[in-house]
Length: 284
Image (cartoon, rainbow, N blue to C red; front, side, top):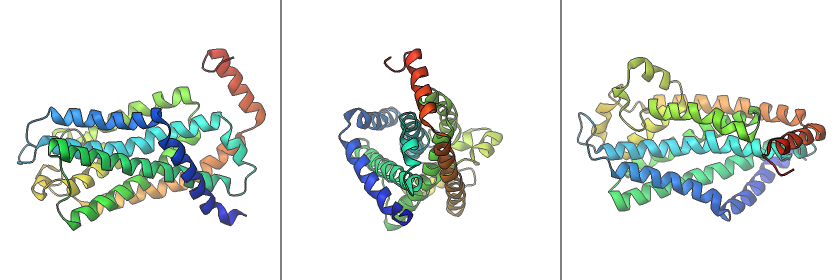
């Protein structure tokens, strides 16, 4: 029975993806992020210091990385916490292979949404703002593997975070502040070399900095590498750091989700619903 969980996960992921495509409210949130990135880039006219690369191109590459990061580290944990509150993990306890299949389904949903959002941003930016696109097969290949590794780095980590967050009402507040801090300190909206060295060193621990750097290497001309902290794209380091985060995320996600499922019970679920109703978060 348990050997069929990959297929069950893919089937569940396909169903959830169809539901997402029919949900205008959820889709509009991702479209809004793309619009914000385009508006910000449209109002930037300077070049990257020391290069002839438009700063708008650097910002678009950085926003592309941040959109992938956000979907994995903000949207996914909120989805998991909300479904836990609705009793999804409780139902999975009685399903053989339920937790791995559930994780596969969420990964499929997030990956498709993330890749679609990235493709939309790059296509519209290229059409309306003369935005950056890969210049040859090698750059397209880099875009592919950086996107893949970047999602592998953040999606399992997002699942692990979602397994331990307290409730949907607190989830966004707990996640948003650190992710916005990483947006500012990871070189996504301006060259990382303009930041103090200690800040650069802290940002280098987290995947967003390397996702943005990898995408810049695929989207910007090779001369733009002089604006990087090391004066190069450091693609082997990009691959190493993102792979390390992917392994860490997978090692954490499944046991934490199983632990969260074991702790679920009908009485706990009822108590949470009663508390939410008393606070006005749910109808009484």
